[in-house]
Amino acid sequence: MSAPIFLSFASNDRKAAETICKAVEQRGLQCWISTRNIRPGENFQESITQAIRSAKVMILVFSAAPTIHWR
Image (cartoon, rainbow, N blue to C red):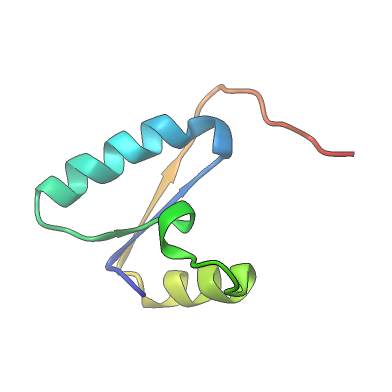
């Protein structure tokens, strides 16, 4: 599923991103976010690439929240 707005965020910023998404969608614009639009079993990288290509707008959520680094 594609949408005109691609919303990108770090996992630590999920609450803020969901708030932004809700506000945008209440104004009649559909957002695409990976946590809800990538279905189980779908290829994560392919899904994101397709969503970016089909989006008209990209919203990037940045904050001072620390990033988790996996080892």
